[in-house]
Length: 114
Image (cartoon, rainbow, N blue to C red; front, side, top):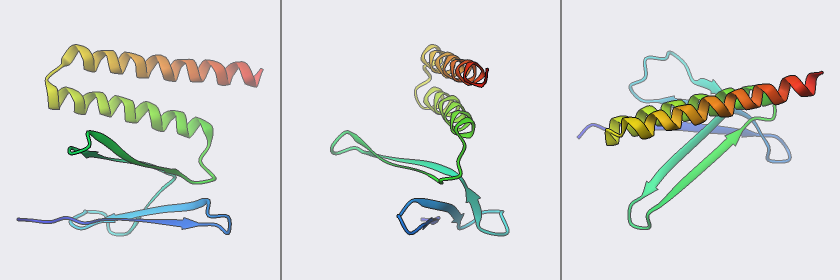
């Protein structure tokens, strides 16, 4: 059986707040360690029927970047859900919610900037 390893390093400041996230994976085509400003990692515990999650973001992650990040995650989760379940209507509902969420965020930001 083949094996791939993903390594995530969290660089913390003196107050243990993430300053930098880096990751690397065996078999990756990237020539060097990759940087990220945020990450969400989830595992499904089949025995307990619970999701185990790690959500981290660096202190320089901007609010608009977080909204973009969540929008893109929701869209890709909808795609994954559709591939796994063949539930096209539910996937479309998830994407509709993601778009409404993002549009609402942008409207709030525009209002706050006035």
